[in-house]
Amino acid sequence: MKKLLAITGCILISCIIISYYAGGTSPEAMENKGFLFSDTPSVQNTQPTNDGYIVSVFAGRVALYRKSDEKVLFTTDTLVRDLPIEDQKILQQGIEVATRKEADDLLKEYSS
Image (tube, rainbow, N blue to C red; front, top):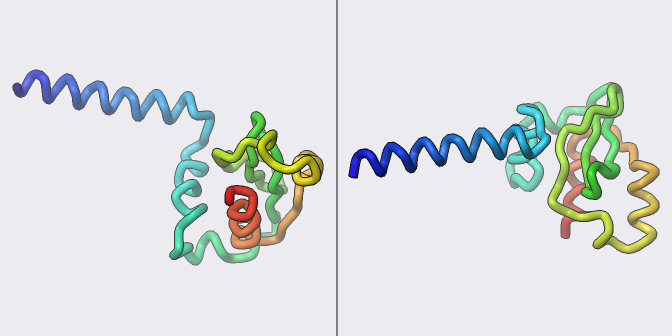
């Protein structure tokens, strides 16, 4: 029984590590994923930044970029092809927002 439990634990840890690296998300993005649909945003993520954010497309999904370096912070589960054509065109061009709260609100709109 202990051997089975140890093997199961190793498999679980391996799956977490593999999904983390195969998912194409950075540690910063993994931290931010939990915030996206949180009802209690942290102060850090709601403060205006000098950089701003861009809501656009990455790998066929709605994604959030940091404007300053165009780094993908994370991608959502929303497939762009499932959105109306007008929204697809707008997202392809990118939507610039000043704060993380605005970005999260916009992402929520595209995810509902």
